[in-house]
Length: 83
Image (tube, rainbow, N blue to C red):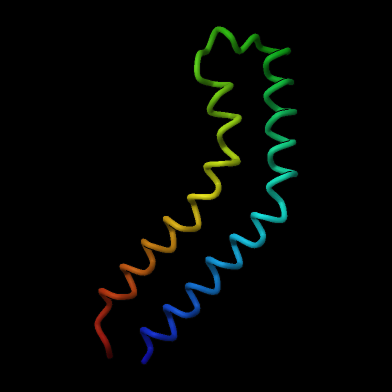
């Protein structure tokens, strides 16, 4: 029964992370665009290929983090022995 409770709590945490991420993704996207523009002007990022693309990809990358961490913790919970 402890595993079921732990899995339920894990699901609530992952869903909460996605709700918070959905609320703040607009802000994160605006910040990454502003940072990309500032770095491009200040440091001429054309000399470093891929830097601008990865920086603009980070808000999309944030969507995978809760799911990956959730899967890792799910495997840990399921492999744990019952007391």
